Image 1 (cartoon, rainbow, N blue to C red):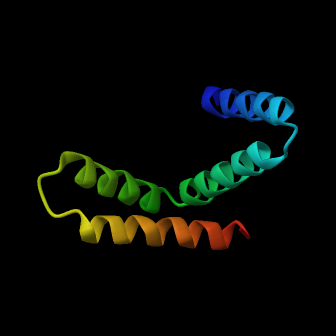
Image 2: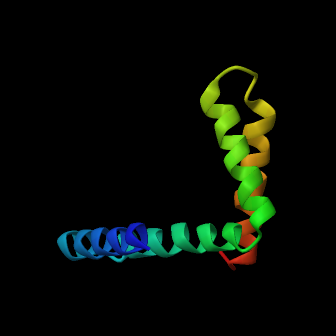
Length: 81
């Protein structure tokens, strides 16, 4: 919950400084995708695993990156984005 509040405060501050709603839109988009992914624990676990595969740099990350993109795209669709 601390990350959510921190990100909201940062987005609000940035929106005020730039006089733009873009930072708030980015905040809503980011957190909507996060929530959509977390709604399904198996999907969240899979995403963490794929991110670890990419970070480790031991194997070719192409398949992992493609699956990460699909997870995010599915979450965006579920969130109506």
